[in-house]
Length: 129
Image (cartoon, rainbow, N blue to C red):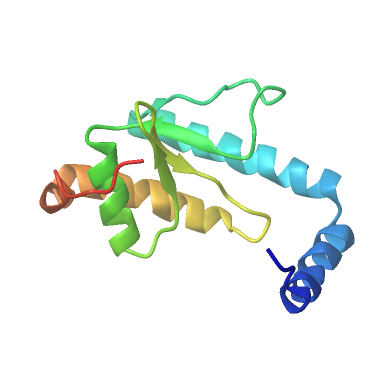
């Protein structure tokens, strides 16, 4: 296809921002925040599927919770951006602009969704990958 120069030019702002913050600093924050996610998941009783060893962990944490596709759909309805992986669970990937409070909120919402059954209307209609 034909390249889109305008889109490529617009993307340079993102590259500039990453360069300004620094990849090492972004990775450091990512490890800290994925560690926080694992800690919160453990406290809440969610199974962590992602590697616990920071040297083996990427920038996301996968939580195996019941009916995770439907839980993901309810999280999306609550404007919490995440994903899910079939046969794995809900995937949360904080970015360098994500706050610790947003991470805590996301885990609290997953707990609430499961405790209240708010995911149930999404059963059978949730998108599958």
